[in-house]
Length: 347
Image (cartoon, rainbow, N blue to C red; front, top):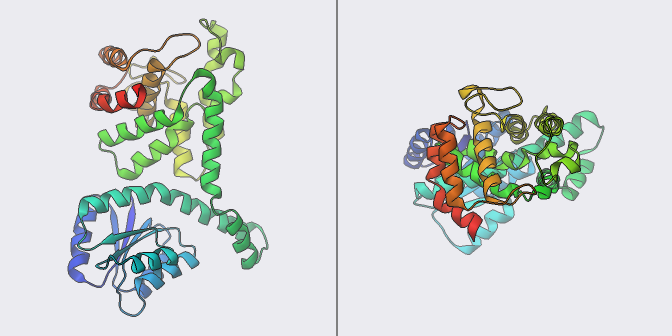
């Protein structure tokens, strides 16, 4: 569950934010001044986001944001202020704030900003873990670590991007677009009313589902005719290879990616592989990744088949639902996205 720290001395604002965020299933902590906020962050690194007013007793929000960044606390900081002056915004950004909201706070806008912050926050947490690993395994000075991290500030993000490149390198041979599959999976998770952080994680993770093709012979992947039974068995190994590549990580995104890689060819009636799981034995993220992959396969060209238009693909998806290949609720949610998907694939 996402965890948010409200740093605000106005009790009415605190009460409003707390009530709204808890209604949205966020876990909420409260600090009425910056000193208490820093103390809470030093004692509990599970916070994901800080909502902080600029005008606080003692230390103001801008100096507190600077202290948060200097201490490498793995949180996203959103500054809240009644002032929209460009100087305030620039000062907040320079101090390390990640975003800026103007009072009175519009709750729908707050939710949007939180969702965006949650997507980026995972990389901040990975960066902190990387620093901690350096400290524990190497006798490096703080100055050396600071210098190293300054040179590699975007390392976690770049590693994820490189994994996408690896996945795309293999799937390009079959004309797949992993970013579209990730988008479908993430939007579908939203349509199923999953928590915002789960939706974001699925969207980041789904593009890696076929990374296991790196261990499959190119001749099989690009074969223009039907595979033999032996070739089919070799091709199916990609789900295990993908799980092994992505598994064993402390990263929530990579854990999710490993699960999707292993389960996205399972089918609701038990006819899928590798385990022949049936119904909700299949992890939900695997079901979401599986239907996103199937739809993408239908509407894009493959060496062994021509592509369908989106309308025909949806007709086939509905037929597969009637045969219990996909869960009805997931297909119904996908149907609500039809116009969006047509724009995505037919423009």
